[in-house]
Image 1: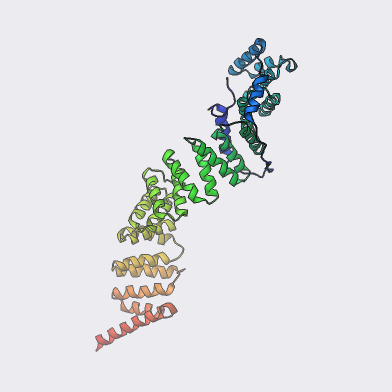
Image 2 (image 1 turned 60 degrees about the vertical axis):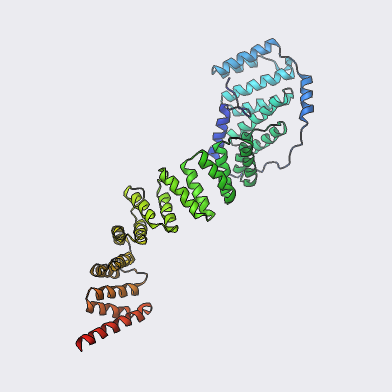
Length: 432
């Protein structure tokens, strides 16, 4: 017979409730505050003895009706099951029999997706005060699940607290559900405590429980406690999202080597596919003074179309190759970036690469482009470099003109004057 889940029973309703809780995580809305006062403790031993004393046998007739109703529920005929049970007069039943009938009616309502009806009949079960304590505890848990399915978080918390009063072996699923409810109410401290209990009580915590606990710690910027939870997620459920989150957490803790190591493993498994992830890995390599693998990662990502050929990305690639002293490889992306840029600064950078290679005419041509394009952060420096490129290309007159111009900028005046003096000295020596 299809029925609601009970603690420790992997029935369909438990899965549906957990799915509902996961779907609503992150969609917090304002809700009225739940009662903060804790309920009085219950003497379970005395209560159990009292129930045992009241216990009566179910008559064969009532037993037949309950059995027939259960068969109709299993056959997918909830209306027929309900009609059978409605033939019974509650006034002529014992409290124990009424509790059984109401419980069956709750299952029937649940099967018909009548949440309110299921809750109402479960509450009637408890009003009879006739079932064994363990069975009533399960009913309270079922009521909490039903409230969770309609996102009535205050009632979820209320009924889970009631459930805890009547059970000596609380199921971790209840604490997970409590954690989700507190999260939805923006009570993150209580949510963390409940999520911790769910994980601690389970020998093999479910992925959703660990994920919720990690998310709560991260939202609270408690990265020290978030780290071991994410490490467990990575080990047991090695999904892309957990690798990425763990690398970010290590970065937040300034453990940059560990952050890079996690990204390397994830990249090796083909998990890093988004532009922001590949750019983060590139920058992590550069931060670790590993420009060659940084350039390799970014170059492949651009070639494969995973990273856009934007000015910024091409400049990052070029700078990575330059830092790795792979000047030949730096030229194509740097030229593309320079052509796309709104300013001439990248032409200056490109000209400097050619100057490092002592390719003076190419450098001069690029520096001319830089000055002509304009928008330079340091125009005086670009003009000075152009003069140096001209001079080394044996173009002394254009060099002197550039140095004369560079003398007009305060930052490059002294250097430009030294070059002018050097040229005049050379020309005087040649004439003498």
